[in-house]
Image 1 (spheres, rainbow, N blue to C red):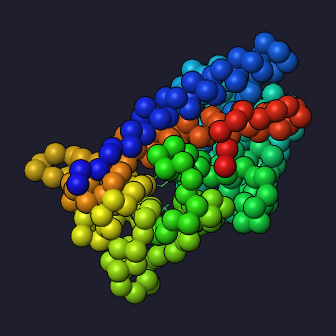
Image 2: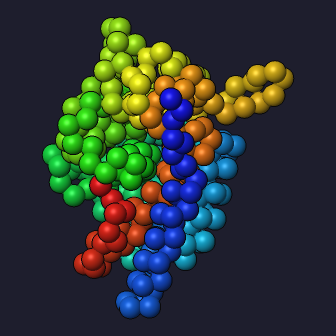
Length: 296
Ligand code: NDP
C-alpha cells in the first residue's frame, strides 16, 4: 500500500483563504479588523523566524498585526504590564507570547495573565479546563490543525482507535482531548509506556508528537492507518541539513493509508489555525457569528 499524502500546505492555504474572507466580511459589515499581538522576549533565532512568519501571514489575511520585541533581560512585571495593556486594548483580539521564555520569567504566570478570551494559543488554564470539559474554548493551534486534517480526510472519527505519542501540554494532551471529543478511543503514550510498538499497532490514527527523529518505523503501523506527524527535527544526513518528523516517512508511507509529510504537513496548519483562532476570538468578543469549520 502507498499512503495518501495529506498536503498540509494546500490545506493551510484553504484555511487562510477562509479566514481572509471572514476578515473582509467583518471589516465591510461591521467595521471591525481582527488584531493579533505577538510578544517575543529575547533573541532566539528560531523564535524570531516564527514571529516574522506569523506577522506576515496575519497581514496577508487582512488582519492587524502588532509585534512587541522585548530584550532578554525584560523583568517579570514589565512583561505582565504589557500583557495587561494588550488585554485592555479593544483593537487586539488575540495575544500570543512566543515560548520558550528566558529562564528568569515564570511561563505559567505569564500565560495565565493573558485574558482567556484573547488566549489564541489556548494555553491558559481556563481554556485547558474548558477543552477538558467539552466546553467552548480557545483550542491550541497545532492539535486543532491536526484535527482539521483528520476530519477532512476521514469525515467522522467516531469509534476509531487513536494513539497520541507524547503528553505535552501544548500538543499531546490537547490532541487527546480533541480526539476524545470526536468520539475516538484514545490512548496517550509517553516515555514510560510499555511496549510502545504494540500500542501503536492497535491504532487507526497515530499522532506522533515526541521530538525524536524518525522514531516510529513502518512496522509499528497498522496497515491503512493514518499517521499525523507533528515532530520537527533538524538532522544532518549525507552532509546536508534536513527536517524530519517523528515518523520514519518512507517505511510508514509504505504501510499507512494516509500520512502527513515533514515539512509540509502539520507545520503550515499551526500558523493557519492561529489566524483562525484570532478571527474566532474577534467574533466572540463582538458577539458575532463565528466562521464555520475553523474551530473544534
Ligand atoms: P515535549 O518535549 O514537550 O514532549 C515530548 C513528549 O514525547 C513527552 O510527553 C515525552 O514523554 C514523549 N517521549 C519522549 N521520548 C519518548 C519515547 N522514547 N517514547 C515515547 N514517548 C516519548 O515536545 P512537544 O510536545 O512540545 O513537541 C513534540 C514535537 O512536535 C517536537 O518535535 C516539536 O518540535 C514538534 N512541534 C511541532 C509543531 C508544529 O507546528 N508542527 C508545534 C509544536 C511542536 P514524557 O512526558 O514521559 O517525558
